[in-house]
Amino acid sequence: MKQNTEQILRGRIIEYNSASKIGTLKTGEAVIAFKLNKKTLLSLGSIVILRGQKNGYIFEATSLNVLKEPEVNFEEWWNKNVKNWQKGVTDPHRVKLLKQKAVLTKVTRDFFDKEGFTEVFTPILNAVPSMEPFLDPIKTSQGWLITSPEYNIKKILASGIGDIFEITKSFRGQEENSPYHNTEFTILEWYRVFADYTKVMEDLERFVLALNHSLGKSTVLKFNGHHINLKSPWPKLKVNDAFKKWARIDLNKCQTVSQFKREVKKARLNIDTKKINDWNDLFYSVFLNYLEPNFPKNKPLIIYDYPLPQSALAKRKAKNSFWTERFEFYLGEVEIGNCFSELTDGDEQQKRFRGEQKIRKDLGKEVFPIDMDLIEALKVGLPPTSGIAIGLDRLFMLLLGLSDLQEYLDFPTSQI
Image (cartoon, rainbow, N blue to C red; front, side, top):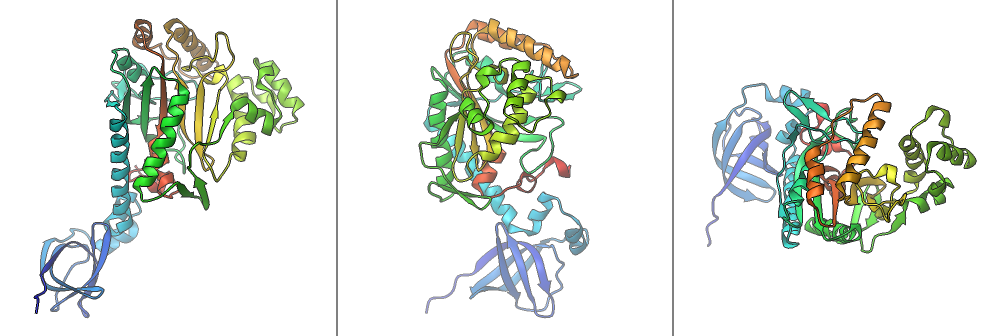
């Protein structure tokens, strides 16, 4: 008769009854019931090694080695703490989540490695912050935390490195900590040289499907009670067509603030234009209230060709055009990423930055200096290039079927 081989389990005691000698061990992302062979005093929360054999659903331990007893009353600590990393001490699902994030990050790197991209690493701390009027960078004693690595990545592109990508942390001050926002977040950016935004659309569809497949799924993503079909090609809709369809507004007739206000009134939208004197504020008021709620829940959406005031870093579709080569993509009505055919004209970029400085001043915000290193990189010369920025936490969260960043993150800003 074949003798059973002794097994070894390592983990933390999260339940134990000294009378019955039965308890529960959390080991990694599993919870295992065990029984000791003799009565033993054992502190809840102890880290142990059990040796024995599995018998049905229970592990019968023939020996116990206590490696570490908690220095606090574990049950009391467990019951009063709610931080996400602390939940992981007893909840194997949080350990599983950590491992799933690691898999998705590896698949991301593998995808771009197979595509021939080079991974780069740019600084999080910069002397000059990004210029976007509606973002608030965070200042430190040594400089500014990045809201995006874009400026530095473009400087590297000027070296002639070719296709590149980066996974990094970014920060946005005054950001609400909500189901879809967090002050600190992980961002993925990739840039294809000698390509425009249509090529990045193709990359995007293949990339998201590769991530979904790595989780053992096909072309369907389950999120917020909906089944999202990721099968290519994804639906695409021009920004102006969306405005016409859902807000009855033609943005070609809205190239100034006064024109935009007039068209909003003509469309009888429930927007108080008297309180809005900025073109972009008008755009967002219509977009968020009349367009986004109509985006499909059961399929992705690429919405493309944004107006110039919304695209300070994007290439125009034609000389002097009001429209630019920019797209955003949505999954389950949630905005995930933003792409441009990049503006590579240094003089034009400097002119647009001055325009953004004026907007910041009009909004009563701090006016930042122009990053002249970026202007210099553009003037030295970038090839035709398209790049995209993706909120990686948000994308991974959706792929894993979660709906709240504050639960997905191990260290959300709200718990600092």
